[in-house]
Amino acid sequence: MNPQTIQTLIEQGLPGATAQVQGDDGVHFEATVVCEAFAGKLPLARHRMVYATLGERMGGEIHALALKTLTPAEAGRG
Image (tube, rainbow, N blue to C red; front, side):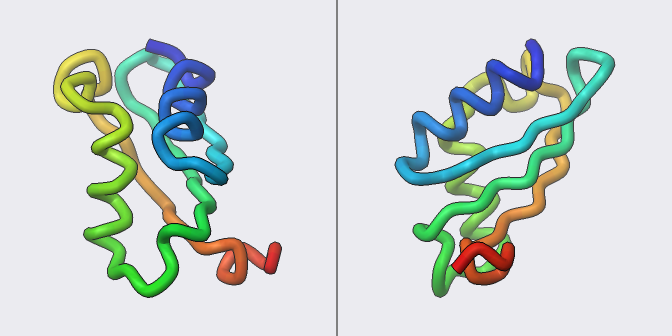
């Protein structure tokens, strides 16, 4: 697994989202995801939304994914 693939999966699964993904070892990654759909949701709900875009890859191909989830306003884009 590579960061670009994870970015694509997240952005396809969350319309309007932008994701920045980093990870050098192929199994541990960090992602910052900005999405309007996160508005009004608690962090756990936001993380579940992102995990849903990755499906069974979580815990398999992706051993760990550290997430920072923001709305555009929280990210200073809105």
